[in-house]
Length: 553
Image 1 (spheres, rainbow, N blue to C red):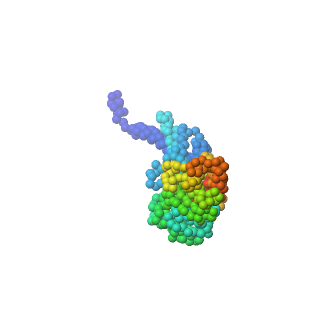
Image 2 (image 1 turned 45 degrees about the horizontal axis):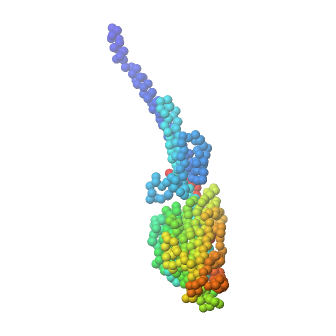
Image 3 (image 1 turned 45 degrees about the vertical axis):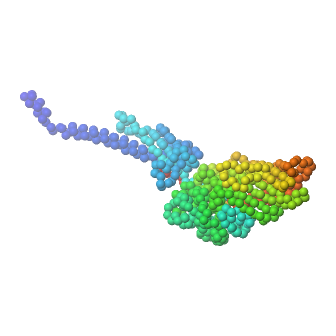
């Protein structure tokens, strides 16, 4: 009987559903608790990502104190206590041809972006009794869009029509014959970079794509000058456009121009051709563009100009000029962020002036051979500060070129071999069968430090040009050379009395003194035609644009 009762208990299923439901509810409660923790972790990660994005924007806006700006932003948003934080400054390139994940390069200068890697321990509410809270790691990249366009300006305060025509004609390979008024029209004219590049795109056959494709295209002097004509017409510079049309008829239009040496668009290189872009609205001077094109068309060749007796007071004046290539990645005008650089090309100049002798030197041609080397002047965008999304101030570090000059003879050819030095020997001042006078002198001006030039938005609007000078500037370079010259006098190869030597030296110096004054007046405008200033560097900020920092990844 008892056995039967026990068996009936096991066969009774009336309470089984309660047990199953109890087990089911236990599992559901556990899963619900886990779901709450998972959802909480997901929400927490999204919150951390949002704060990391804000911190990346703050750091990108203040690159100089990126770490402090990032930590302050995290702290004010309740994430001051985090497990790890890495603030990596680098460069972000907005290049569509590069995979998104490869556009940021940590440590690459000039910096324009910050990558933040944030790590902290997540919070568990129900599962913390049996498992460790997982780590939450997020990353964000902020980049700044602040840019400035700047150039090493061409002053040309005093235009000498004949001299400038001779230089440009030699560089462009034609017979340039413009008047002083024509040059003034070019100096007074400005065109926007957008109008010039858009016209240039049409000239080189790039109807679609980016401006980087325009810069990479093959171009001739004719293409560039024609683009300048169209840009001048589009911006209302009719007089300059007419002068450029005249220049088109006088220059060798087939000479090639390396556009990559003319303009560096930096981050704007990927802008679509023909599309309005605020960063390309800055203006550039037409005469400066013509000078730059002439220098680039010449490449690193040597040109010779014979001014004949065109200079009053001289029997003749001959000049040899060689222009080197600027350093890699440097152009005449640059659009970029902090760290962008513009450099002039190295320049070598040989002048040979002759004047008629008098007195003891009557009937003798007295020579003065001058050789000048001008190094690279440099302008570097050190900082661009923005306030409230508006342009504040651009700081340019400018360093004038070192200038070295000799009284001495150099080989007429070989000036364009910039990889080697040019031997300078004592110059033959007087060279006749009976009398020989040689002279040697050397002077140098320059300094190794840069000078800070600050440009405000009003400076940009006013097209202000600022100048950095060397500390030991020589206003009269050739005069200084003659004053330091050592003269050696020989008659029939034999030494003569000190009195006669002294008389000949005095006569030679008296004859050459006016020559040095003439050359001092010619040297500056001659070099300024190709954008070079003796002992100085002129810098102009053509435009500044400030954009808010944006997320790049």
